[in-house]
Length: 364
Ligand code: PLP
Ligand code: COI
Image (cartoon, rainbow, N blue to C red):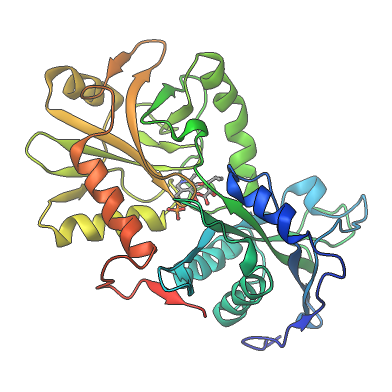
């Protein structure tokens, strides 16, 4: 059925929001993903009614039936973006239309209904408006927004569900890595891949993250911060981390990042490629093997490597280990170009630098 492009949101303010003093305490050192705001967005979908019942309401548990499809077949997708407080006190988002489009792409891959772009953007605006006092004022702070959708039909047959919840929650955020690590260490997964040709690697679905948890635990057990995945077919080509894309910087000043296909098309990845090309840096989207990575790091041809994503922003990679590799990158700390690109991106996101590509969307 034809769905309206957006819906009026019924706003029900929290009757007993967190006190000013407690909120100030919580957002002083928020970490990542632990603290939540007072409100949430809930929008319902059914095949018969399309999108309906758009609400901003007090955040709290939702009751779902034990036979709810998502609990059995994982028909679920999500997004991640941040709201920033600008130097003039206004609040902005970074490329939210790109998140809306990726959410629609993920929905198609998981046989779910698309949330119209206007409705997605309005839902984000509505929760940020309700919870704008939760945006941390600490250096590097932002309000992390987590839109997600799941199949809510009560039915155990394996088929695309006929009913869904679309929701948005918000979480004040600081650095993703504890202690704001200067550089992270990676563990190369020998036994597992994140995605394969024809699979769901390019979609932001919860199942991809579930599949990454065992290899990620192995990385932690090996004393590393993150797992890095190789391709499923040849187990040779570097793909990405569990929740971040990856870039390589060479001695001639050029950059390389793995091509799209089985990886998540990161918005940070795309933005950094654009900023690098603006600065005259050659950026290739090409396959890069783990053996080449090791050889280039050891010969000095590779100068820097970094991970990037909404949560991680730009995080230098200092060392790579696995059952058959163990090498350092550069001096093991942040590289020069990595630091420059990070500073450039963050300055645009926070309204401290010109925004030549029109990426920053001011809300209010
Ligand atoms: N790759 C994966 C698997 C991710 O979960 C993320 C985070 O969203 C990214 C890459 C980076 O994407 P973005 O820059 O759009 O946040
Ligand atoms: C993000 O950067 O938004 C992510 O989704 C990565 C991770 C927190 C899942």
